[in-house]
Length: 263
Image (tube, rainbow, N blue to C red; front, side, top):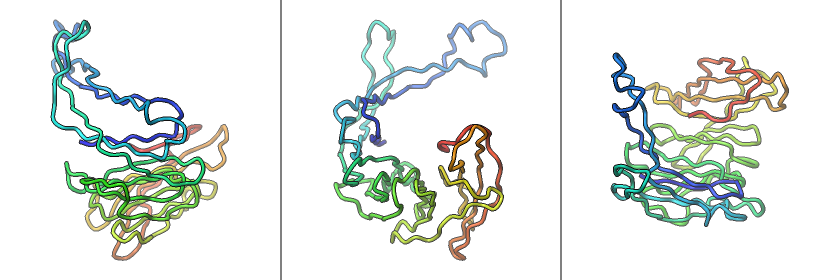
């Protein structure tokens, strides 16, 4: 397991590892008939990573990578009646993931998960408009590929399930699909006719759907926010052999609220 850290806030951030478990002895469950299948969910903080040494002025262009090495048990204290399982984290490397001359910061990070349990590559994007691809297994201080993707910030990016495609969204209101091997731009994503002008892509996520086509989701917010702003979500199908990308389904998602990100 690897964690990455990078933010554009001038404050310290604490990353916490939570242990989620079900408690049959909870007062809400014990002695109540018919709730065996609705057990109380218990959350315990088992470890913390404090970013205070890193999340400071002029250090937001860095990405710190941590790797877990097995498990351990938390120490007992006045609040812990029994030890809990946690992960042992080791700081692996710090990389410079954005090189904008002024106000550089890393904005988005994604792992290529084309092989389950073995992140092949790490993708970063930020204020200088570049996508940087790093080897995930043996991360070094220089990327294996840099793509000059957008004029300005990269707001979001994602990698296809097979690791062959990357889609990026920029603050320049553009969205592109890239070949992850060569860095070649394969397609510029248009706004669906059902949505019309005055909108831009805010976030994108690939799905595991489809065999012939690669299926992904895209959300759209109004460029100019108003009290009556609306947001949309679209399901797209991309056929690489034919070089065609078409919307399968377009729906209005919400009123008076902007979509920030898809999980």
